Length: 195
Ligand SMILES: Cc1cc2nc3c(=O)[nH]c(=O)nc-3n(C[C@H](O)[C@H](O)[C@H](O)COP(=O)(O)O)c2cc1C
Image 1: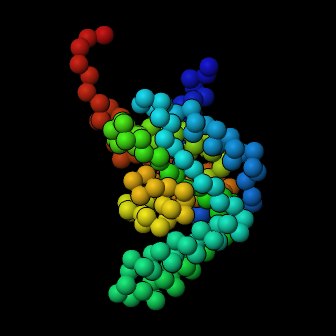
Image 2 (image 1 turned 120 degrees about the vertical axis):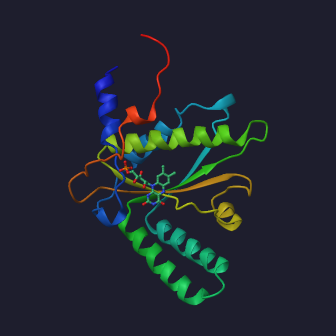
C-alpha cells in the first residue's frame, strides 16, 4: 500500500462540469473500473444497497427526454416554457457527457435508511476517486431534488428506494482544476486526551 498515493488521489479529485468536457468517449473498461470500485464500499449489515444505471450513446438523449417530460408534469404553471427549456438543457448536457450514471439505492427495510444512505455515499465517493485516478471528470448532479416515482420506475427503482442524482462523466478538455476548501481540517476536529 502507498498512503501518499491514496491521499494524492483524494486531493486530486475535483468536480468538473459537462460544459468543460471534451467530446472524447470514456472507454467501457474505465467505466467498469469506476463501477467495480463502488462495490467495495462498506455497508451496515452487508446490504450493498447501491444500484446504478449507465446511459451511453443515444440512451443519454432518451434519459434527457424522460427527465424533461417528468419535470413538465411537476411544473404545471408554465409547463410549456419550462418543458422546452428543460429539454434543451438536458439534451445539451447529454451531448456533452460521455456517460451518465444514475445513482440508486435499494432500500432494505430491516436496517435504518440512514445506514444505507451512508453506505451508498461511500460507494459514490469510490466512483469519484476511481474516475479521478483515470483522469476522468465527473459532476455529481443532485440539486437537492426529490425525484418523481415515474423516474424511479424508469430506473428500476421502487418508490421508497433512494435516487441520489446522476454522475455526469467525460474527459476534461482543459487543465485539471485546482481544489479549494473554505477552512482547514483543524477547524473541524476536536482532540481529547494526550498523545
Ligand atoms: C451529494 C452531492 C450533491 C452534489 N450536487 C451537485 C449539483 O447538483 N450541482 C453541482 O454543480 N455540484 C454538485 N455537487 C458537487 C459540489 O458542488 C462540489 O463537490 C463542491 O463544490 C466541492 O468541489 P470539488 O468537488 O471540486 O472538491 C454535489 C456534491 C455532492 C457531495
